[in-house]
Length: 298
Image 1 (cartoon, rainbow, N blue to C red):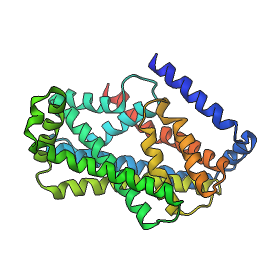
Image 2: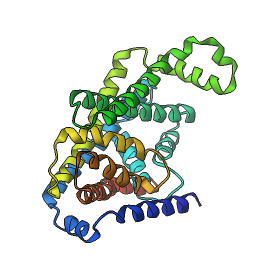
Image 3: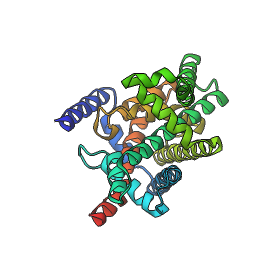
């Protein structure tokens, strides 16, 4: 039932998008895209997935999960495949947790490791967006730039605050607040050496940079020429919005957000939509190795 609702919402969002887009022009743009540049974009996306899997391995190693890099790469690709292709109630994170528990690891530790991987990845995205907005301040109008700065600083500050909740003893006395208290305690233990935390965040920045390069290459493949600094500022908010699980694999939300944000700098909305559709299709293609690893693991 949940997937049916997501499908309906995805169709509705595309319906409204197509009200403002020349569909024939969109098809022409997609048909004339350059295959060689798309192949380069695919390499960037595969590299992004590999680096994300490597970050996850670094985090799990701190939790004494002793598996090879190839194990985490295979599991990460399987999770990506479930997220992008299969209309399943089992998400990619659940697949990764199941993989770890099949190896005999404690389920709670597996959940915690995947959760930390997600959070560190999100912080890396916020850091990249904040730095790009400050360095290239003026690329977008003042109000939009200030909004991004406030959101990113708020998110990063919230993450930093989480480490200090361990010191607030009374939180442990309340069932809901105790969750944050215990999480803060585990985070401080995991990242007793803060240098490791900064390293993992830096890796996350690299993961998202590769994803943005993927989109930039796709833009070039349809002769959509726009400065890379615009991508550094515009794309992270789109990634943040696609985290909201209200459509199938982010379809519809990604396209709407992409068109809306890029239009702020006068970009051609039809080319922006074509780029976003190509990116969605590329995500599916890049996740296909996960289908092989999944079938093989069964």
